Image 1 (cartoon, rainbow over the protein chains, first blue to last red):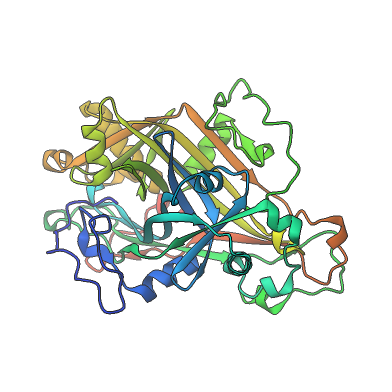
Image 2: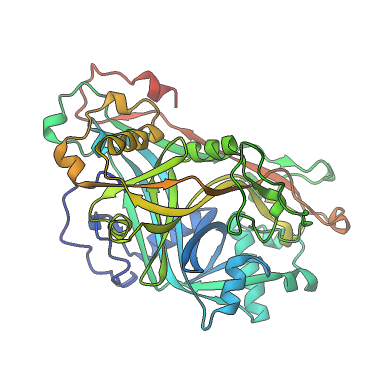
Length: 233
Length: 233
């Protein structure tokens, strides 16, 4: 991310007991003081987002697609049609498909006196690993429930589960949380001391995200009210 | 994205006069009725987001990183430290680095009676192409202004421009909008007719995004008020 001349730290502290061990791929070349490896923190960033961006290599070139996902402990799941590209590629790859799964929250706009130090406040998680096709029927069910509950917690128990035909049309891939890092920027602009007297406004514009009132389907039985787990969103 | 059994259309309509020509990479294998190639639509999706997810290949594996970007006509710009990975890789690659740049807005949560038809409403743009290092001094200035103005329109004119040292520390890469597509889902759930009488709430939870009140830096001269271009956000 920008404002790239911030002082380098001496590098990220080694992962705490409850952290993912840093690797060559998860130690950033810049702003390494922003890197974090704590599991609880990384889980919370992953659980708060609706979509991830899944990257894979196809014919030597990168492809990045947005997709829903779910987390069960130290494993992420992505699903899709058996005909969709990343799912097909995973099925073909042996022992699996190298992927990079990234989740980002943009929390604020950071306005500095200098153009150079403009930035954003953000929290991102990058997961490197090998995606594998999930074939175990029970794990597939667990994964599909987790993906629905990731969007709306509690929803999988209040919907019709997939039937055999739907299950047959759905591919599920898994990605273990092993090589994982977060990167976080918070706080105000890092202006140069010589710029502090310039006549430009400086500060942060926080960004907000929320849900508007639910819109029921036109064909919904009016006797069915909005469930508590939706009101709670 | 999910609810993968929607009826396939006969394929996307060929790009209109003002559209990007579809290619093998930009015609989706699934839900091709959701694909769009209109330039104005694609520009509006690109201009509305704060970060993109930039994918590239490093040591044979995909890497996906969030980053700021700007658009000038049919060209996107990404900047970063001269030491950051994608910028360095681009400098090394001849004639440039294959990348995939993806932007996604999540507009709503789509709750169907069946778990299978759960989805989200979204607008995404995927750009495939070759990133090139920008060396022309004037184009670099234009690009850096565009990246600042992408975050806060009008801001580049109200901040100190980069000086020679800052410019030397900043790498800028460009990506032309040639192989581009949007994918859009709108509307309510696509439940199966046999599920319509099930006792589950169905509909859409729209998501909202906004800005909270700007927070001035503690060291800001109190005589400097919030500029109109920030209030307008």
